Image 1 (cartoon, rainbow, N blue to C red):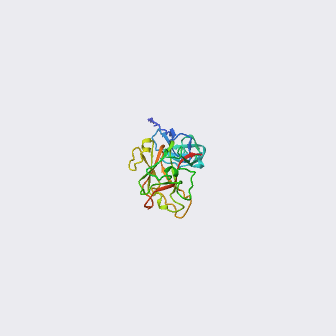
Image 2 (image 1 turned 90 degrees about the horizontal axis):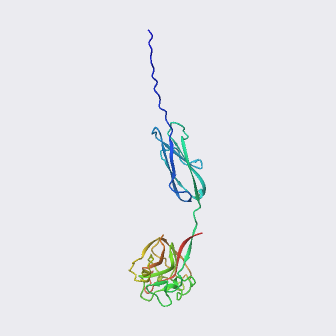
Image 3 (image 1 turned 120 degrees about the vertical axis):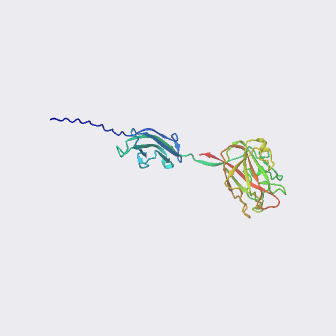
Amino acid sequence: MLIKRHYVSASIPVNGPPEITNFQASLASPQVAGTSVTFTATATDPDSDPLEYKFLLDSAAQTEFTSSNTWVWETDSGDVGPHTVGVLVRDNNHDPDGDNSASINFSIEEAPQFEYQAVYPPAYNETYIKTTNRWFELEGFRAVDPALSLSGGRYLNSWLTETGHVGSQRFHVEFAAAQIIKRIRYVNSHHDGYETNVGVKDFIIQGSNSATAFANLVYGDDTDWATIATDVSAMVQHTETYDGAIWNVIELTNDTAYKYYAIKCVNNHGNASYIGLRRVEFQILVEV
């Protein structure tokens, strides 16, 4: 007796490779050196297999194959120029070197260079520089005028209050247009290198775009003034016996343009009669 056997062949599903559907940068090209740029890949797999990604910069591997689909490029000056950022994806069922790839052309430019530049009021007089108190011919504008001497006597060369005013003084400066002041240089008060304790000690820097605020010299009235953060809160006393310029710097954390700036002079370095400054210079950053 002949017995026939029938065999049914079962089809084995074929595993499909993954495919990158999107590859993008967090910032548009070009960017300046020093910028961090994040690259993100999106891929699909027909079998929902776990995927691994590998990132390359100009064909050089920046990562191994990992489950992370992002890479952060921390650029620096050595990266200036055109580049190609690539990504590979695999599911470990096909090509171990990657089943699919994508790339982005991305350029890095040199970061702009900046330098400090002094800015001055339109004129050196009490229209543009005001103080809560001043002695005749020792007005505040004399401390801003770059033509005046930084050595010798302070008379006609600096700002000084009348006797009995040793603190709580406003020193206001108006510019022709709003400026983003980033740094203040100063030479603290001295007279032929002596009486250095007259110089300003503790201070507060403020900015405003209100002409009314600029004209108001009441120490405790901060209406329409914004306080600007600084890296230090006290000015350095001039070196006793040194008859000359000793420049010190106050860095301002300021990104707002103000037409008017105020130095609130809290106190001096111990003099019982006066408070004053030899020179104040306001500086902005300009691209070179």
